[in-house]
Structure formats: structure tokens, C-alpha cells
Amino acid sequence: MRLVRLPSGRAPAQHAESVARRTVMMVARKIRTHRVGVRQGSETGASFARLGRPVIQSRRLMSGFSAMQNTALATMAIALASSAGAQETVSASLPAIVVSARVTTWQGDARAAYSLIHDDYCAGADGIVRHAVPELLARDLRAGIATVVGGCEWRGLTTTLAEFAAQGFEIVNHSYSHPHVTPDVARQEIGESKRRLEADSGSPVTFFAFPYDDFNDETLEVVADTGHLGSRAGQPGINPPDGIDPLRVRFEVFGPYSSYEKNHEGLNRYVDDTLELGGWGVRECHGVEDGSWEPVPLAEYRAHLDHVRAKVHERLLWMAPPSTVLRYQLARSRCGAPLIAEHRVSIAADEACLKLATPLTLALQVAGDSPRIVVHSEELELPTRLGPSGEWLVDIKPGQSIDVLVPD
Image (cartoon, rainbow, N blue to C red; front, top):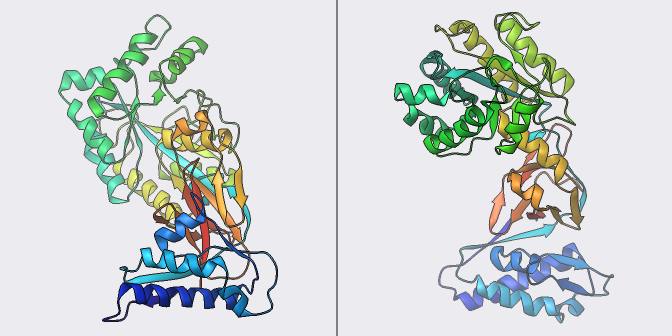
């Protein structure tokens, strides 16, 4: 990227004219056009006005540089550079040619996704706050905390829910009093507990975990009717990368009802199987080193989290709370395919897509062999990185447009 620095003592107007001349010369060298159009309005002309980056469209070859000097580009370049004349630097970048764009299966183009849910907070699983939360935070990992809200009210622990939410943990609805949820109590145990959890945590509660993993079609209908995005109510196993039923999310429980061993080898093997299938693994645990049902020994828990962290750092695994993963998958299926218009890329979005309000990872192929690209959306430069398949990765929101540039 070339930077044009404002020399000491030079007036902004003189600097603006110098910037314009340099811009036109750069365009002549790089593009060699006769007819040059600069997009205006909400398109890339607005981006240039903000960022000092010219975006050029080539129409046909020119015979010489003098013809281009007399085009509208030179006049517009001077005017646009004047508006940025007081800035210290002006960046020179060219529009990229975007060859392809796709939404990755999982965020960050990870091979698979993994969610950990700790059940029975405020109902005997005291090791969640004593061990699980600190161990997860120490590794920069987050999980779902399935909460029995009646127990929190009885024990005076409701204020802890807002603290967990502020730290990035998801407050999962685990009923009001932890009964077998039958249709006659479903509104109280599902709907009312959701309302109270949201009031106590100050954050949306969108995922339900059935106590005793006991559910039927009628209670699943109440989950949907009360505004939940999904529920842990599927068969044991791994969720496929496509076609997930949000109300019947599959999972494995740590305990006697799982085919995996009750130690860190079994916990890790479930993650490795999830990576092999490219799906979404959901692990149900209760407490850690406490008096809850089938608690995970602390040493086994630490060994498991170390394994997960290693896979995350290798960019093979995306670990996130259940609603985060579910939102991504639903958005990927409900939002439109990426739209490419030269250097500009966007994701079409209708009301159902926008309601999910979740960023999606785009994998971009750009013509040429530039070692770097620059992606802007409005006034922000978005982080990018090179993915495992040689595509450039960037997270954008549905309905958002980005400009893809290559530094000069």
C-alpha cells in the first residue's frame, strides 16, 4: 500500500492537488483506460470520499495518458482529495476482482462446531461456578449454563446470571423447578422460566434443555411458541452440517446413557468424531467435581478443555454456546447466497434472515496473487485472514455490503 504523506508546511489545497495528480498517474499505470467511471452515491464513490481509495471501471483501452487527464476522474479526484486534505495520509488501493464467494458451513471456515452445556445450575451443580466457569475462561472458551431459575431465586443467586452473560456464557433455560415437563406444566416450566431468566440475566434466553431429557411433541411445540430458537431434544449423536432440526438438537450426555467413556478420552473422542463428520457436537454435562448427577472429575475436565482449545487454535473447531451455533446454521440456510458485483459482495437478506442477527463467514476467491486484501464496509475495515483452502475469510452481517480492494 502506498501512502502519500502531507509534507510539512504544505497547504491542504496544494496537498489535495498533489494527491489528485498522483492518483491519476497511478490509474494510468495500472489500468490504461480511455473512459473511466467513478461510482457515486451509496456505491464506491462514497467509499472513496471516506477513505481516499479510488475505485475505477475500465471500458476500453486508451491511446495515451493525456486523454485521461482531461476526463472527469481528474476533476473528481481533486474534489475528493480536497475533502480529505487535512488528513495525514491517503491510501492508494485498487478494486479486486472477486471470482467467487461462499458462506462457510461453520464460522471461521472451521471443520466442525462444538457446544458444551452444563445442566442444573442453582440445582446442585455448584462445581459449575467453582470449577467450570474459571477453567473455561482461562482457555478463552464459552459454554451454555442450563439454569433452574426457581433454584436461583430460592438460593439468592439470580445476580450471578447477569455476570455469566456479561462474560459471554449463554443462559440456557432448564425449567423453573426441574420436573419432568409434561404438557400441563409446560407453560410455567418453559415460558415463565424464560421470562424470569431474561429479567434476571438481562439477555435473551433462546435455547431450552429439558430436565431428564424428557420431551414429546406437545412440549416441543410450547418451546417454539414461547420464543425459543431451539432445544436439546434429539437422539444421541452428532448433528449433521445441514438440515438440523432446531427443536430436536442431537447431543451426548456425560454419564451412563452415552456410548462414550466417562473420562476425558470419551469426551475428546466425541469431539474428534464430530470433526471427522464435519458436524455439530453438543455435550451435556452437569457439575464438575461436586455432588451433582454424574459430575466430571476436575482433572478429566481440564484435559478435555485442553484438547478442545488445541483444536480451536488449529482453526479446526469452532466452540460456541448452542444458540450461537444454531443462529449461524439457520442464517446460512435462510439468507440468500452471496451476490458479487465486480469488487462488491453482499448477502441478500429478508426479514426472517435479518431477525437472526448473526454474522456469517464469507470465503472469497480474488483474481491475482496479491498477498493481502483490504475489505471495507462503510467506514470500517474488517479483519481478514487466509483460510485453509486458500480463500480469504471475512465475517459480515446479512444485508451488509463490502468492498474488496487490493493494496497498491
